[in-house]
Image (cartoon, rainbow, N blue to C red; front, side, top):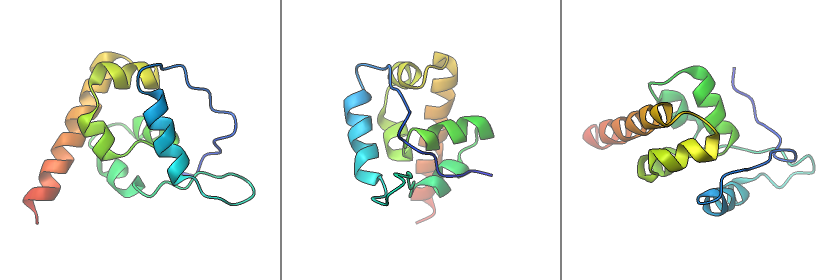
Length: 105
């Protein structure tokens, strides 16, 4: 089960993509008093053909399939602190999902 994450104690160590990604996260934050993150793209993320733990990580950091499709795998790996090969698999799954979505229109 995927639950909303609190954004209060998350630290970011990535340098090159952190500002734009964190700006995206801030714009999607729910403005209630407990600062709980509300992720609108979780249905798309949960549709990716990747492991559930990776889906939870992507949701935790507020990444969308649009961002995943356009971000270089090396930048994603640095931002999430994961292996470049795994980041590449995530990117491939996001592009495939985007292509499947456009094909069904």
